Amino acid sequence: MGLTDLPGTLIAGVWRQPSGRAALVTLGLIVAVALAGPPFLPDPAAQPDVLGQASLPPGSGHLFGTDPLSRDVLSRVVGGARVSLAVAGLAVLVSVTIGAGVGLVAGYLGGTVDAVLMRLVDAALAIPRLFILLLLLAVWDRIPLGALILIMGTTGWFGTSRLVRGEVLRLKQEAFVTGAEALGAGRARVMFRHLFPNTLGPLLVAATLGVGDVILLEAGLSFLGLGIQPPRPSWGGMIFDAKAELLTAPWTSIFPGLAIAATVLAVNLLGDALSGALDPRQS
Amino acid sequence: MSRVLEVENLRVTFPAGDGRRVAAVDGVSFSLDRGETLALVGESGCGKSLTSLSLLRLVPAPGRIEPDSRIRLADTDVLALEGDALRAIRGRRIGMIFQDPMTSLDPVFRVGDQIAEGILAHFPVSRREARERAVALLRETGIPDPAARADAFPHQLSGGMRQRVMIAIALAAEPEILVADEPTTALDVTVQAQILEVLDRLRAERGMAVLLITHDLGIVAGRADRVAVMYAGQIVEEAPTAALFARPSHPYTRGLFGSIPRLTGPVERLRPIPGTVPSPAAWPSGCRFRPRCPYAFEPCGREPPRNDVGPGQWMRCWLEGEQR
Image (cartoon, rainbow over all chains, first blue to last red; front, side, top):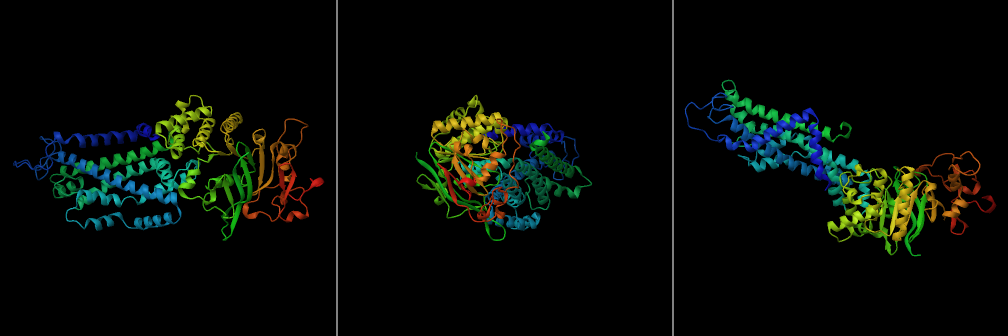
């Protein structure tokens, strides 16, 4: 379909912007290391029972040093990248799917359906997300990874649904929607075949920025012990574990902190560059 | 001549805000025979586009077609259809071309796929077959290199080509009626002529009936068999095209002709119609053209009768005989 050359055009548009280029390179590097790195690194969970291997500074055979349990910090940061990126990606996929569906239905059908859905969204937006998360996560002693993803996904779509609804309200005025109806297209067809692809641009920007949000949120939750459960490595969890050694072995918290900052910054820059690439006035 | 469309007393109303409903189309009746072209002429806001959207029941909310209206497609009562039955006539029985080819095509799909969509919606054919038919339709509209154009996105085509694509889309499901709502308004004059040419040729080849909606009397001459002139939600005069041009009868129709520059004959000042079209909420009682009419006299405060003025020609006016 016509959407096939969208990715190419977008990547080219992002690449033209210096910040977009930096974001692509950084993210590409992080993803590549997360995907390909582990076989070349020590097991992040391994605690070699070797005296004198604990809290080693960077260098000395361990590029990022070791933590107090003598685990390799680099391999834990890389393992954390896998988990963080996967969790963020899946959670955003869930929230974007729900948000786009609700926004499409509300915007296209309008009337009572729209009013009811949007009032529900208003109500949900009035409650802080962290509060809902803490409430839901309190159910488990040890939160299963799948549940964590689902919960973060299902609490993150409210803004997206508003965005998509707004786009749909604008697109509904365009003649091609009436045109599709005049050809005998049904509601579902108009919504998913004509309206949805036309909202993909803003949706993609929102999703990208959403990934940054979720990474931060997950790190925060993990820091509170409510996110990803040990021994599975997570950036937030590593910082939490390292807080006692903040002064004696700062590398144990600096590297996961840098990983969070670099990833979120790159993702946000990518989001900005995407919205720039989608804006015809800038091309 | 077989009758393909019959519209009787069509009324489309909108809420006025004070609980009343205002009729933007108020008692429009016309019919269409197989193979003929009827032009619906009027200024913006006279209700001609709403009339055309009504035929497919696409009047935008909160507008509503009043229940005492009648739209019959040969044997089908359009106003009684719902759901799948309604969708089955859209595109299949009545095809529609919209005014602005810039916004009437979906920007994210190749035009060939958009034509194929209309085919797939109504015929049980494979994608490959639909695509072949789409290319054939593009060829019929006179697009050069149709197979390559089918792969183009709307923004890669010129206005004239896009309008040809729109025509191909409207014809995709082989409708018996083609509604062309200001099909050339957004185009250059030379391209306008080409598009009208294409429409006329396809009408003749396919034996379709065409409802040509326009504000431009210039494109009506030589294209339409009959002309219906609309003013303020009503048809004020209907006549065979030649008769209308030879002897426009309703003061509004005469006003329209008076405001068109002519290339032949002595140079005259254009005589624009004074005033503007009132909004539907402010239509006067009796004859709606009365406030702007140079001939207005006492009876015009009452609803004017349908007044026959010649073979196939009638108007909604109190003027008679010598008074005209």
